[in-house]
Image (cartoon, rainbow, N blue to C red; front, top):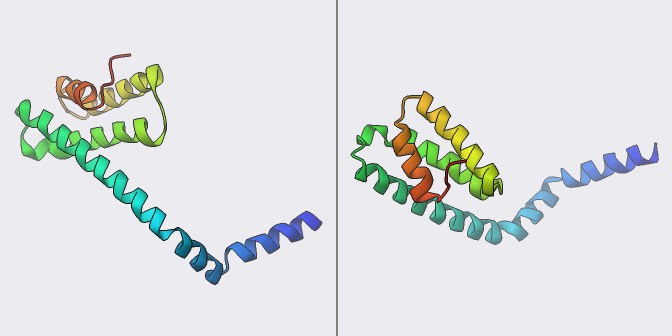
Length: 121
């Protein structure tokens, strides 16, 4: 029962608005700088994807689904920390998914290899 009371007290403390405010205030600059770094990386990746799409003559109306494919690859390789053969297999699953949605598998493969340097599994 003592553990239950301790857990309830810890919950009340961490949900106290003043405590939350002070904690976020202490972290805000670091949070902003990390966000800016990630957004710069994503913008650079999207520019590379747009160059691949432009080189392959893709209509601009189709950029959105191709960029969504690239964003999912980026998330796999950067946020989820997958690498090597596991990343290649996950990238192939994404490629198959977006191919089934009507995108050109050759262009998806070009994005996978040219932008992310992920080979076939």
